[in-house]
Image (tube, rainbow, N blue to C red; front, side, top):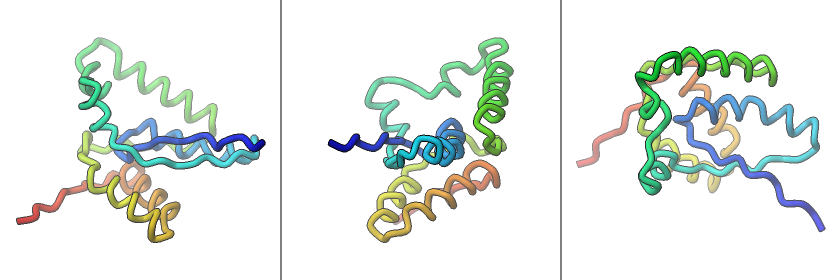
Length: 134
């Protein structure tokens, strides 16, 4: 019996998802296991569970930002991944980006789309805007 692939549930708006995405290839190579990428709406999960993002709930807590930066540095060093650059437009509504991820699956360009979206969200700090349809 074969083992199921581990699922990586991600939203492009999560900096931790970006860092994990950067670490996954080395984990796959070391273990011989391929991750299944599953797009989710993190904001929708927060809303459904009456929760909010840590960026919101932990804002204003003394030393929290500094501790988060230290933990990020440790993760980057441990997993040898490129660090992200904080997107000055964070938080970003990723609804359309995540919808497009589902479309990319059907079009056979899912992996390329993931790479491009994560790159433009974090290292290049793109401002994502949501079109208004009337």
